Image (cartoon, rainbow, N blue to C red; front, side, top):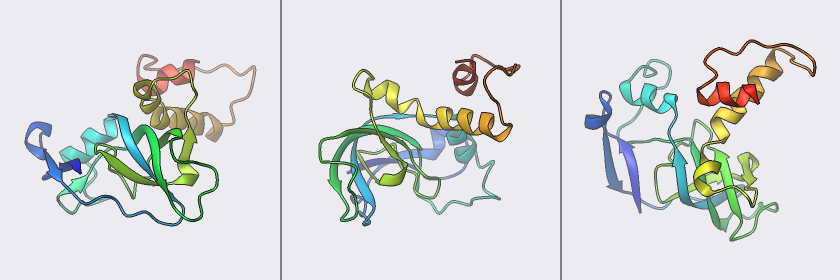
Length: 163
């Protein structure tokens, strides 16, 4: 299968390459997703540029991408909440990136069924910004009736927070 890989730190144009890779291994709690859409996030650029290499150094070539949508094509022995053919989306855990590929194996605990009225492209744009927004608001104990000032309301997280 084809996958976009980081081949070095630096400018995006010089640091990414499509490569032929093995199909992902499926663990007992995983589902294998055929990827129909993936989204980019600011974290992708930071990783590629090397800004996070002191925190999380990469072994090149390294997978990239954290937001994904697609269909379940295979499932691990312990997976009960998903069936082959289910439309799903996910924020892939940081220790198993790779949504810029044809397939990805993801722990089913971090995968959700896609609403029927949402396209694959829109679903792929929801997970990271949606979770970041919810976790941020929960962290400061926001509740109904509270007033919140949202800076940068035109970005992904800001747009979600406004809603």
